[in-house]
Length: 490
Image (cartoon, rainbow, N blue to C red; front, side, top):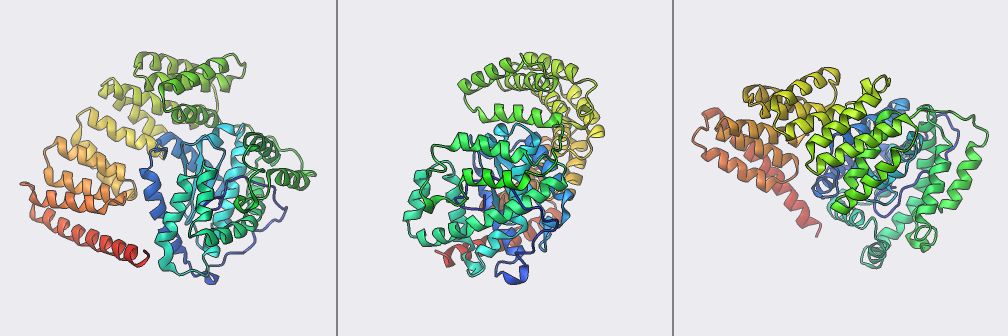
């Protein structure tokens, strides 16, 4: 889906072997830098939404999977050399969307509807196609850059109403009706371009392109009541029936390419199923579904069901049951070639031990997992949590400061660092770290307040005061700029 009201679905692509150059930066008033700035602004708001799945294993899987698609066809980074970021939102609708600057969101409902990784890849490749072709920048080519703030508000409004056709209709009838209509007209062509690029990515990545047909059929069944029957002015994608026929025509002569799904795919589907169920009754329903899954003969499905039941027990606070079920899942997975590559089971094991205050055991597991999965961001954060739980505050501070230097856009690192400083009674540094955390999430007034508290701390050194002054000047300048932009575009 292109931004705003599009519902994402992928569609078959051409057999071209090179990506079309359709979105040159020199032909757009919206520079790659401004496009990224707009995307970051929207993401700050999305991250505050309760339905944003700020879940380390899910984010890690989606970003590793998405990075694999990008690596298979490096030219999709385009002239702007995008740094892609993939994330999930809690929403049962079968949907995904591309935001400015390389941010790609996937609904939890779509992850669950995808029966194979090829189907999931077909959606994500389509969204990468939108970013690669700079569809948003091209759409805004004739608009002034200082209109980005109201544009961002309109994007966020559309995302908030992503499951409500009535809300979409209301937007169409409002003062922005003409602009949105023009965007929808552009979007229909953009979808076809993204289809062509997406199919190439799918092929280069070694995925089964027939997965698109299966997914479209499922999408058509799920959305029959409100998709193809929607009025033309609200339809930004070609009709689902049209796209199924198109993809069948484009892939008819292609040789079937079987791809074995990874264990992580099934584990993440189980995890997302639990995370999507945000009520006690929802968890009971999911538990029943996992019990039925246990009747299957497929080993990967059995492992995923045991893991899902373990996660439910963990969410319900039954940590002994969670540990037993997780161990059963691990026993079933022994000998699996994918197990050595997956940090998902290890992640839950550490969480369980942290929850029962077994800090030393959690730290032992986290150290082992960190050696086995050195690139895992989720495990890195759990290692910091385990150091704090084991009261190794000085080690936690050293580790977190090093991590914060390497990963400057992760506010959780600064939050954990503040916790470590607080445990040592270092008030100035505690509030400095909290200020950095708030600034990274876009809460500049709160960040400035934390700097004021840090300045008044009795242990603030001369060096601390100098850092506080410098950061305060920077945060205040950024806040003034944001306010001026907002005033200008009212």
